[in-house]
Image 1 (tube, rainbow, N blue to C red):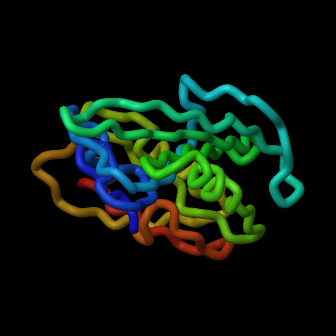
Image 2: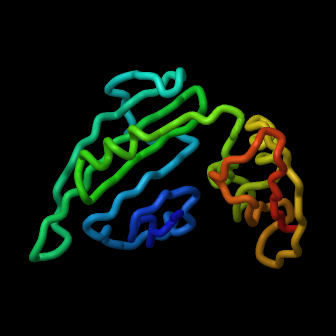
Length: 188
């Protein structure tokens, strides 16, 4: 499942890709026993490489798993374990979090694979843009660099300026063959 979160906090096992709820600031509690992996096209400020290794012949960096305990209710303490893997040459970082165990974080991160010839639809959320969101002019070169083609689908919008990306199909993170078309819905 993807983006099963409230205010950016996973509420069930999920993969977080361009989670729209992450921009909302609230005190959503992560339930016990919930595992998640977040994919990002940017290195997080707190990422540091404890070791280098290879995934399918490509250099990767690993931040060791750490766990902390926090009290979210007067009757129980919960644990949150986190670890990360970065692949700088592919501009992708994975962060795994678990309220289960450090072993679960390590298991999730050990399953990362590089699939040649199958790029994932890249994120557009970090591109910035006119006051309301990322613009198609900045996203088209990102798609091209990933080996994908853009098809713009203009949609009338009273809320967003022309050129603002409203969504993509297939969804961000979907793996496609090289040369596949990504439909970019754009405000006109």
